[in-house]
Every structure is written in structure tokens, then in C-alpha cells.
Length: 283
Image 1 (cartoon, helix red, strand yellow):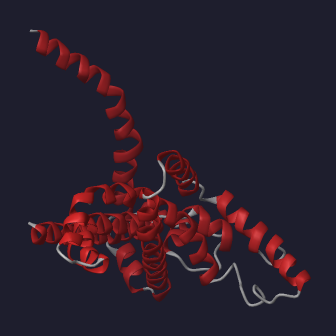
Image 2 (cartoon, helix red, strand yellow):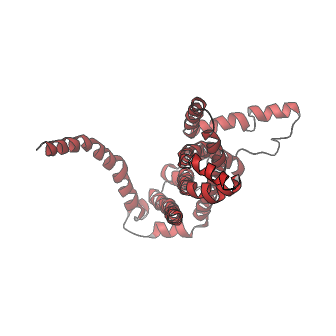
Image 3 (cartoon, one colour):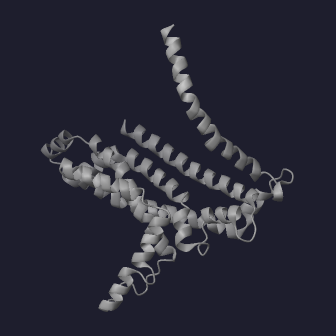
């Protein structure tokens, strides 16, 4: 009797959360998917929006650019985080906590504030741009913040601290006794990491990469605030179709959003298969 009462109380407590999930997650998703199968102005049911999205070079280029910048920023982020997260485990606890706090703060510093900060520092009239010109240095003479390189640099900024936070716990799976045993058996540090260390943290690396890829694929505010519609990204194209100044095509935007979601899910599925394979090999 008491168990049933507890279950009822738990169910009542969970009702508000279930309603929030339905209202703000499931219903918008369902409406978006349904709209993607409608014609322009919501007339009839058709696959025309998907045909347009998958045959137009304009939207395919946007998808290609989104995938490329996501791959680039994710690779750079995870390569830096591999060494940064390991170095972090060697620091004293007090310093380690401060660095983790800073990493947590910077990983959430994105969107319009991040784009504005880069414009203030590295824009055409940014602080460092004018300072280096004043000093006669040509370091930033050919650097264009509003190009693909500048946008990738901004993406890398919020990818690195996120990767550090995700990779940091994986290094604690490597026990110090393993290193001591490998050293006693005559293994070098390189051999230890090649045969023991890297295989142990590989599932964490693969999982972190999938999260970074999804994080950058869905980024919108940072890219739009920095380059506006001058750079063709799929997320920007979706935003323009939903809230464009000239015309709106929410049905086509829904189809592009579904394609974007499928791309992200496919990437995470591939990484999940890789993680299973790595875990199976470790056994």
C-alpha cells in the first residue's frame, strides 16, 4: 500500500515536467515535421519541400558548409582538449577546480555576446587589429574575421572548453598502477599510451567528438551575429526562411530542419557504432 502511494506521489510530481516536455519539445517537433510535408502556404501534402532542399545547390552548399565547419571545429577542439584535459589532471586540486570553473563559463559563452567580443577584439576596427597596426606589425593584416576562417575560429573558441569538460573525467579511468606496471616491464611512455592509455580513453574521445559535432551543427546565433547571411550555413538558411525580411517559407525551413536533424543523428549513430566496436575490442 505504501509503495503504491509513493508511486502515485512520484507520478504527480512528474506531471509538470511531462507537460513541459510535451508542450516545448514534442509538439513543436511534431508541427515542424508535419509542416515539412506541406506545400507552400500550407496547401496540401507533398514531398516538394524535400525535393527542393535536396536538389537546390544553394541549400546543399549550406549543408556542406555546416558539415565542414563542424568537422573542422570538432577536430581542432578535441585535439587541443586531449592534451589540455590530461594536463589538468596533473594540477593541484584547488587550481584544477578553478580551471574547470573557467572552462565551464567559457563553454557557455556563445551566441551574440561571443560574436560581439570577437568583433571588438579582432574586427576591422578591433582592439588588437588597431594595436598591431599602430605597432607596425602585419600579423592581422590579411585576417578577415567575417570569412570562413574567422567563423571557424569563433566556433573553436566554444568547442575547446566543452571538449575539456567532457574529456577530463575519462582520464581517471587510467590507473597509476598501470603506468607503474608498464614501466617495470620496460615499456616507454609512448608504448603505454599507444597500447593502453589511448584505447582506454577512446570511447570518451568518440563520444566527445559526436557531441562537439552536434553542438556546432546546431549553432545559429553566433554565426548569424558574426556574418549574417553572408555565409551559407544550413542553420542560417533555416532562420532566414522562418523570419526573413523579404519572404518566409516555414514549410521549406521545416524540411531543412529535418534534414539537419537527420544529419546530426546519423553522425551520432556512426560514433555510437564506433564506440561499441572500441569497447568490444577492449574486452
